[in-house]
Length: 429
Image (cartoon, rainbow, N blue to C red; front, side, top):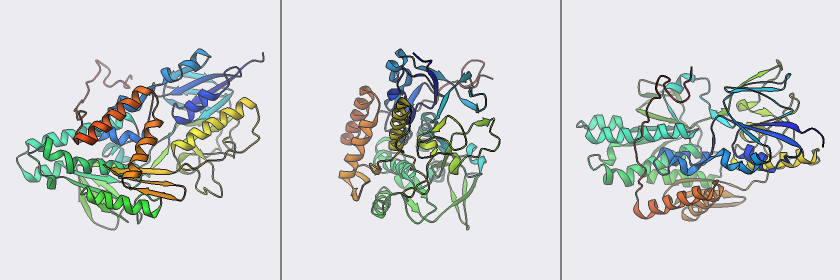
């Protein structure tokens, strides 16, 4: 048998996992690299942030998920990717250096502050499980402090929330906090009046959910307003200093907790050995119709890192889980066959977002759903997309319990503790 090629996959998300599962281990010696030892489900990060779900319910150990593949020769390497040397064909991580014959980039995205990097130290974000837990702790801590505050003005300051960005993530976290205001405060925090909590969502364009239909945008606006969320369209944030959101064109909003969902960029790392190479829009990697990165030999980009403009998608394919899943399977099939006979063709299975209890929107082809029907469809699709039967059962039980009781047992303020001598888990310096 011919010597197997070394296939290195960066990222254990939907694209990376589907590639690992479908690649022929008889032809390729596979190494999967991820900064975490688990796969997580980003569409439900907001539910962790709002105490709706436990983090372990939407996360799944990568070693368990690829256990069969590991028995067939796949290796898992936990580490942060710092650089790629395209001349030497090596990947450098925080844990070592790995050789490759073919490399797949599927690390996903991180927060994009559009040049205002100081926001990293001032705002809350929702691009990982860790960030979601941090957001949950801050919301709960503010509710607890407001419950014992004697000054009504202090309570209002503590409970002032602003969400930046009116896409699916922004709409969903704003709606989740709105449900806390409408359903939870008077039951769990009788000392607080719902009028003392303010929630504002800022969107720079003329409607929410810009990538979805106008019917979905209108339904999202109506749903948020019913949850007592103040929606401000055509409004951009210029900066955020001293608990004040400064708006472009003038105006200010006081907020002690700003949640940023306004933009994403591909996960950064250094590229060595290709001085003329430039990333595409949003830090993504421009590829041909076979997912091969233009200008870099034997390197492919999948999912959120892929930039493949076409007549149907002039700004590149949408950064959705379905794109990642389909590209992972496509690349595995092509590499197994040893040729790329057909170009990748994305099959759009629709878009959806939830606003709150019994409130969701869905665009499936030319069909537009809203309200309870869309909400049930949203729950079903997200439930079947989770990895592992335990996760599916846990999430279903939490949703059913919350629906009938208007409550959850997950509002736990768990701050964690420092590790002896080295600070946090990742601070090994």
